[in-house]
Image (cartoon, rainbow, N blue to C red; front, side, top):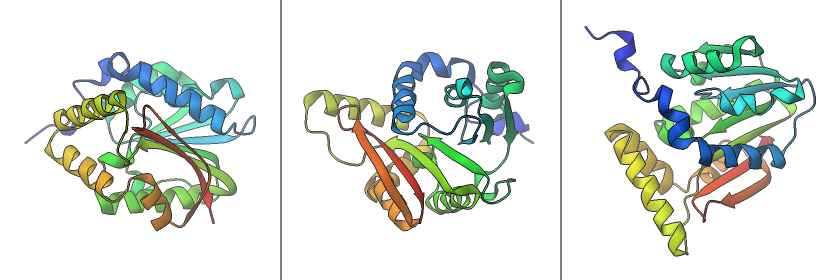
Length: 213
């Protein structure tokens, strides 16, 4: 019988994650912060919080920080990073243990593309449920459009190779996410309203600030 930790796909890279992807992710976090500044002292949830760096971005606002992830290895790093400044739990985001109408801002960065399609729908439904009526949801993920410039095509190639390296199921879900049109298709299907959007990274990454209808 496999140990629980053996089922954690991030167990080998959790400690190296920021070295591998930190610089790109930092730029995305800053862009997201510029896209929407939550109220001081507000409640923020990071869905697929990973190593906790995205939540850490909002620490200076004296916000109440919450994170949910399925990977114990990533959560271990996040707890070391954030200490008592955040409430972090290992749980399934398709069945969140939070009350409705609770969060001022919900973050979800580079997570939806790796989920099975039915799980994506459930997770987005849960985000809507736990978001305040006047709250916002910040979605950051790969852009499904074709990059026009050479740098964009090279960046897209690196993304594809990274997704292949992540495993067969991960790559299959990435391909499906891209084939349906990425975030715009999921936003429309989930009946969310787009307030702002940014396409960055040489047309390979997108940020959407959305809210419940």
